[in-house]
Amino acid sequence: MRKKLLAFGTACMAISGLAASSQMVPDVNVVSPMRKIALGLGSMTDIITSVEGEKKDVTVTTSGLTISFAGLEAYSDQMIASNVVYGDDNEVYIYNIFTYLPTNSYIKGIMDGDKLVISLPQAVYYDDSTGMIEAYYYTLVDIVEGVDEDGYPTTSYIPREKSTLTFSIDEFGTMVAEDLGANLLLGAVDSEDGSWIGLGASYLSISSFDEEPVEVPAGIEVSKNYWTSVGNDYGWQVNFAQDGDDIYFQGLSERMPEAWVKGTVERDGNTAVISIPQDQYVGDFRGYHIFIKCVEMATDKDGNIFYDDLMPSDYVYQLVWDLEKQTISAKDSSMVLLFNTSMKDAYFVNDLIDMKLHHQESFAGVPSNPYGLAFEDFMDDEGFSMFSFYLPGISTEGDCLLIEDLSYVIYVDDEVWTLEAEDYDLEESLDEIPWNYNGYWIIKNYDSPLHRVPLFVEGITTLGVQTIYRYNDVETRSDIVSINLEEQDAVAGIEAGKVTEVKYYDPAGREVRDPGAGIFIVRVVCEDGTVTSFKKVVH
Image (tube, rainbow, N blue to C red):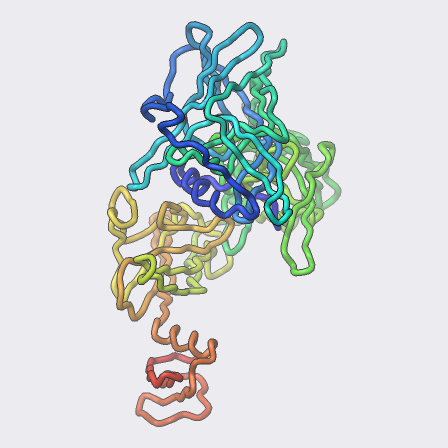
């Protein structure tokens, strides 16, 4: 299994995912011994979202447990970009103390000599905008090992009703939480039922942060000369600068287009080797400090990619630059360059596998056709159906297109489908969707041109999608690629073994025993006697 790619949604979505997923933990007894009233939390309006005082930028580093689709997962050394505010009367406020729970709120402590004492529980999040109340607080959580009546080992996570978290502070101002460890977590707890939601820190430290991200030296020309990084059917622009033997790339990370990475170049004839050292700080991404790290890619017997330990800090990632062909590629395709949030483990916002850059003279072109259209009907159970498709971000000539200039239109029964604002949680209704839009309903998969859009309508016969590209005031479009849902249902029936007869007829109604290329009417008879006919174009 691949190491974790950090998922960055809205705070509400991230919290909702944690709360829901906490029910999926296998072989774990999550104890709920208390209710909100018993805790004496009072009103959730006591949540601290703004404070006055001396503000200092810090790194909050945590290790502990988090929930995933596979159950509880240990994580280590996650570094959060945060701040501490020193107020009046020895009050200290710490912002966003957990990696996977961006509450955008503070917890409050009191300085006592060289200690910081935090009384718990403290409410940190409340939201009822979706009609479902989400409310969370922090407290200490005991981890209790035991056995069940059949003699099998059990693990229980028991939130404390009242507790105190104490930080020791050293001469450099670094705060380290005392007592946390294998049997005690600082945990996030559901305020409605008092249950631990599957997120807790077994180690927590707060230290000053004064590193500056990589920047190009003043006076060095930045060449926006159409170097592009190629992904899966799409790419993105990478800027370039050189200062003697120093070389800089901006935008290697698809998710951090403004971030610079520094390397050195050594030329040998018509080729050059670019060396990129690890541990350079490249900036913050949605509240996380991001560092360059490397990891070796491996595959299991089923061909699944996974990452093991990070490479030692002195390992140098290398690229080979072909000066004649104007291409840059990874020297060792098994090594992966990470834009990583941890110095000890692979938790990344971008992983560049077998990196390839090429020089491109222009981004003009006609977008390639969509492909892989599929429809899943969830109307009876969920109230919507899902339309999915792939939209290549490359031209018909194989060149990269600028993602910010791409969009797409969906067709339902040959009519443009309008995404109504109230249905799709949008600020305004859309007939045309930006290619890289990713929201609550409209989903663009990370590191893939796969898009998914729900449809709140029944009785659809055909679905289509078209890519639109507007570059330098010139508009080009792909073909409209469509699927016939009756045909899709019939094919699914064939694959499931529920079809007893399939016959092809030409437009005049004559049966065709061995259909080649052309337009045909297909007649499908199922086991239950259902007969379905549809038009099919065979290429």
